[in-house]
Image (cartoon, rainbow over all chains, first blue to last red):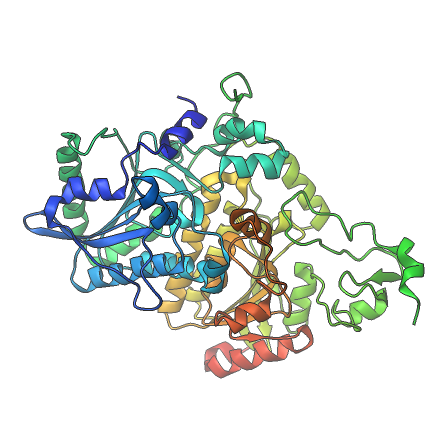
Length: 276
Length: 293
C-alpha cells in the first residue's frame, strides 16, 4: 500500500473509532467522565475509567471522530477545542492522583482551527498538555488508531510508548496542505504523503513509534483479547519502574528523536506516488 | 513630510514578497537605501532613523521584524552574549525533496545556521540564557536542530540555575522534517518542564509572527509571557482558519492585544521598553549567584 492509500484508509468512515476500542477493550466496565471544569465538555474527546484487568483500573482518553453522520457532527469530526485538551489533562491528573495508568487513543485530522478555539487558547492548551504529560507520575501509552494530525494528535501522545495500527498515519501537516504550500499543486498530494513519511512502517523506522499493530476489523475481533493483554503487560512493566526512571524514560524517548536515525532513502516520484 | 505617494517607486523590493508561502505576514527588509516605507502606515522613514529606533516606525509605532543579532543587541548587556551550538546545522533526515537547497538558501539569506540563536548573556546584570528565533530563516520554522538548540539551552539553564528568556517567532513546524519536526514540540516542552520544576524563571517574548507548533509548545509555557505590540499570535494561521470556517476573521483577531485581552499574555510591551521590562522581571526573580558577573 502506498502512503496515500494508507492515508485514505486511515480517514475512512468505516474504521473503528476510539469508542469502538474502548467498548471492545473495557466492555461494560467503562465509566465516562465529562467536562474540563473550566468551560465545557468537548465531545471530540471521550474520557473515563475502565477495568483493563480485574486488578487494573485505567484512565482512558480518546479523540473521537464519531461513527455516523449525526455523531460526527456532534463530535466535530474528532477535532478538539482547547476544552477537549483541558478535559484530557484533568483526567490525566486524576489518574496520577489515584496511580492509574493512562491509555490514549488518537484519531484526529488536527486540533480545531476556528475563532473560538483561538480565543480560548488552542496553542496554550496543547502546550500545557505536552509539558504536564512529560512529568505525569504514572505510565502513559498512546495508540494512534487512525489519523494522527499534528499538534492536535501530539496533545494526547506524550507517552512512555506510542503504538500505531498498521494503517494509521501520523503527520506534522496534511499531505494536501504540504503539496499546496510547497508545490502549489494539489495533484502532488500522494507524493507529499510519501515524502512526509506518515505511515506506521516509516515512523517505526524513524523510532517515533515502538510498535505497529495489526488491525482489528470489527469490535468482535479476537485481536482485542491479545491487544488487551499486550497493553496490560506494558503497563505492568512501567508500573514496576520507579517514578524517576519512568519519567526519565519518557523524557529520553523524545530527547533523542531525530538524533538517533540514519537518513532515509529519497522517495522516487513515479506511478506509485502519482494521483489518479 | 514627504507626500508618500510620490515615493512609491522607492518601495523596497521585498516589502510585498511572501517568503515561499511559509510567511503568514509579509516580511519587510531594510534595503541598503536611505529610505524605507513603513508597511503599515506607508510613511517614508530614513533608514538611519529606523535603525536608531530599533526598527519601529516613528509615525505609527509599527514594529518591524528584527534579525536575531539585532534582538540580541537590543536585550543583552554590551558584548556579553556568548553563543551556544553556533555551528549546529540541520541534515535532511527524510531526504525530503529540495530541502538541502532550501537550507542552503536560508543560511545564505539570513547569515545564520539555523532558525534559532541561543546563548548566555547578561541582561541588566543578570546571568541569563537567551534564545532568539529568526523569521528570516525559513520563517523560523521548527526543525530538529531548532528543537535541539532550544532543548540544550534549557538543559544548560537548569544545570547552571539560570533563568531563560526566549524570543519566539515561527510560521510553525518545518514540514520538510515531517514528524521529527512535530516531536520537537514534546522535546522542548520536556526541557521547559524540567527547568520549571527546578524553580527557575522562564520569560517568553512573543514576536511577529508566533504561530503553529511553537505557540503550542514553548512559546506558551513561560512563567511570564510578554509580547511585542500588534504581533500575530495564534495556533492556526489566519488563512487556515478562514478556509476552515469559510468566513472572514475580525480585524484585530490574533493580534498580541487580542490574545492579551483573552487572557493568554501577561503584557504587551513596546520594543523601546522591552529590555527594561525583561531586566526588571529578571531582577525580581534573581538569586545572588545569578547576579554575579
